Image 1 (cartoon, rainbow, N blue to C red):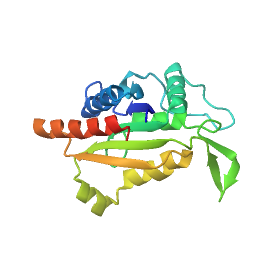
Image 2 (tube, rainbow, N blue to C red):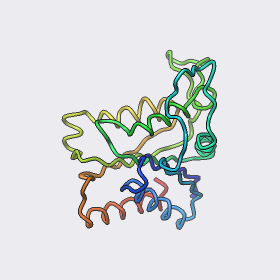
Image 3 (cartoon, rainbow, N blue to C red):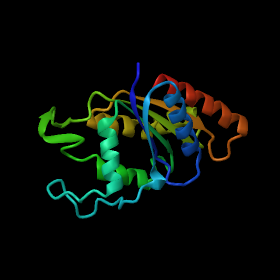
Image 4 (cartoon, rainbow, N blue to C red):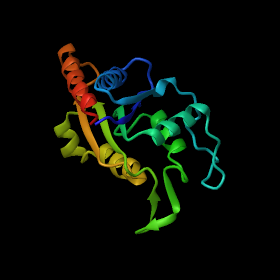
Length: 195
């Protein structure tokens, strides 16, 4: 079944494994007949600091952020590719979340259930494709998959995008070419299936 897929490469660098994998996913999904929009974080120009803004006086969105909002609104499935840096997402990606996932678009603080604002992006699913140097077994045992729990519960889940399925590739800083090829093949499978 054809899906509208928004792929966000959340790596702030112009060349990265996340960029390569995001393009592999997008190309495979397009070849399978899905509608795809792809954004590279490094191409976006915006102030990542919410600064003096508040939910009553929102900081005006730059054009690049308006495009992200439009793509999220259009999507049925969101794919986020990001490295894990110091246990979390890169600062510019966190800034994008801060600036884009706002009341009136992503959630409604006036309507509450169990004390939580009503999510406004429900009906969408998501895939996190995460790279790190931390092996998955250690990430689970030592850190309790903290970054995944944050993204699943306090970012995507908070605004209604669920389930968030996870693909984790490690060690990603200096991978062997055969590993990159294997990871690319796995991502292409996900793209074709819109998963």
